[in-house]
Image 1 (spheres, rainbow, N blue to C red):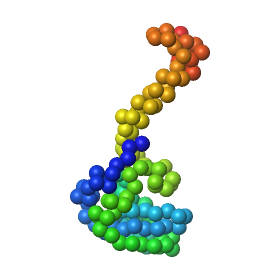
Image 2: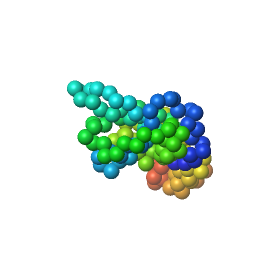
Image 3: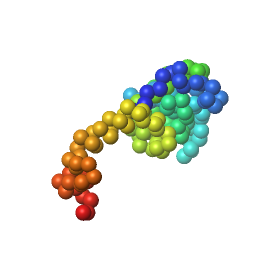
Image 4: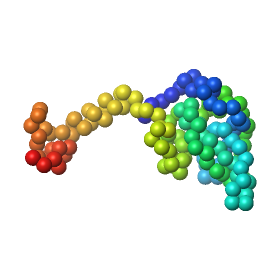
Length: 139
């Protein structure tokens, strides 16, 4: 995973609007741009969570699920927002398109490649039928 410092999340890249830190039922904290919407005959809070300096698709929260609502500037929201997807609630992470996730670092990619190479029992261009990586390839 790539970690982005708050200084690398310029608030100027975020659109204008009302920003807040919202504590939600289920011990979840969301930071992002908020609006009030009406859906299903009820007023809801639509919050576009910030992840690594970008707004994600809106999440709708019922008013009775909000424990605390702290309005803040977009600069403060950008500074306090999560930089890694694992800081977001599972329900939000599950709906993220791959393009919304931060790119992996070169070190992470190198570690992944090293792990695969360590598992491979092939020697050079000769594929081993017992290799856990290439064993399913028909010879």
